[in-house]
Structures are given as structure tokens and as C-alpha cells.
Amino acid sequence: MQIEVVTLFPEMVRGALAHGVVGRAIERGLARVGTEDVRAHTSDPHRTVDDRPYGGGPGMVLKPEPLLAAIRAAHARLPAGSPRICLSAQGEVFDQASAHELAGLPGLLLVAGRYEGIDERAIELGMDRELSIGDYVLSGGEIPALAVIDAVVRLLPGVLGDERSSIEESFAEGLLDWPHYTRPEVFEGRAVPQVLLSGNHAAVRRWRLGQSVARTWSRRPDLLALHGLAAEASGLLNEYLAARAGGGRKVEGESHEQDRSGNREEPHDPRGSGFQAG
Ligand code: 4HQ
Image (tube, rainbow, N blue to C red):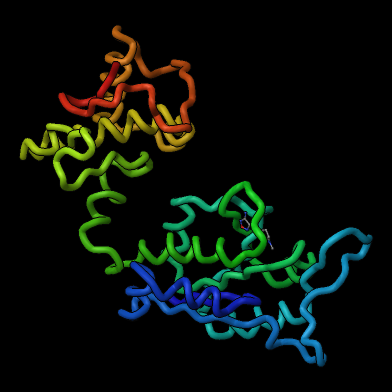
């Protein structure tokens, strides 16, 4: 896949892409990321890229001429069918489903703005869609562009090895991750859950799925509503809820307190079977 980033800070983008999984994918030729410097498309002595907002008010606006010229130059390097995407808090929220969708395309043009915003006519003329990485305000589109690149590139064929086939394409897709442990077996008095030392692969798999489902129910019920649950996961959630209530409560229609602060409703002792329910 070929990706181009239109930015005022090409060094920031290139630097961030030199490390880790994405850096290796680029080295191996599985993805190519180019940058286009908006300032290179100015012609005045001051290389001006911003100007004051019509209507007044604080802050500056990214001028349409150099931005559109940069978009066109970068887009010309991309294969046909590569969308021009602006990173913007006004965009549709980028999620894992969007990452899978973008990973199926031949190329991507990502436009990272700065200042209070981009002249609306450059958005109308130069972008095919707008994506937001979440409901908070950043000072530039570079970090959102890097988040999109990271999430997309790790989905490209060959970028991840076994890690992916076992998680993303697995029974736990759409759920929060299960807890991970490595050596030592006891750390500051806290032991690794016994089931993970048992060598019983079916029991480990079941425990992990149960942990994922319980955490998702507790911390991010919106994800359960979005993805639904496969039969095994649904059964494990019912077991968790029954154990938690000390009764036979069922999932459907049940109200619960949303706990996004750390799922501390269970006692910590992670030993013993399944769900750590209190
Ligand atoms: N921006 N998701 C870029 C964001 C944002 C977000 C504010 C976009 C600043 C210049 N982008 N402008 N959230 O906060 O994508």
C-alpha cells in the first residue's frame, strides 16, 4: 500500500514512522509512506501558509492555495482509487472497521491540518472524506494521521505474524483484550492466574475469552452492542454475570453500572477458575 501525508511537519511524520511494527513494514516494502510539505507550494518570500479568519476571531486558518497544490502533487503519486482523507475533529470517527476498510485500498492520501482549521473550500475541493480519531481537540492532524497509518499498516498482509491470526481474526474480535502475564510467576505478591500455568490450552482459551467478555461488559458495553456476541462468548458472559450476582441473572436487558475506570469490581486475587467474580 502507498500512503502520502500532506503536512507542514514532514519530519514529524517521517520520524514517527521509523520505529516498531510500521517502521519494519516500510523497510520490508509492505507499505510506502511519502510526505508532501505544504510550505513547498508557496511562492511568496515569507512562504505563507496561513491567514486571518474572515469574520474575525482568534487564531489563523490554513490558506487554500498551497494546501490544494500539495494535495494534488501527492495525489498524482498514488494509484487510482486512493481516497483523499482529511484528519478532522468534525470527521466520522475512525475505528477498527474503518482500519480494515482502508487496508483494502491501493493507497491513501492523508491531509494533516494545523492552526484553527482549514479553509472550507480546500476541504470541499480537495478531500473525499474526513476522519476523526476521537472527541478531543489536538493542535494538528499529524498525530491522527499517524494513528490511522499505524492501525492500517498492521493489518496489511505479512506485517504481523502469528500475533494477529490469534487475536484480531479470532474469537475475541471486537472485544477488549484479556489480561497478559509473563515471568516472574509471582510479582510483588501477585500471582499469575493458575489456569495460565496449567498447560490446558482449551481452558486457557476459554479463560481468555471469558476475561475479554467480562471486561468489555464492564468497561465498554457500547462495544458489545456494536458487535454482538458469538454463542460461546455469550455463554461465558452469562456465567460471569451469574457468579457476580450470586444468582442466575441473564444478559439480555440487564442494566449495569458502567465502569471505565479500571474494572475494579472484582477482588484482585486472580487465582482459581474463570472469572474472579466476587
Ligand atoms: N484536529 N481527530 C486538525 C483534531 C483531530 C481529531 C484539531 C484536527 C486540529 C488542525 N483530527 N486540526 N480529534 O483534533 O482528527
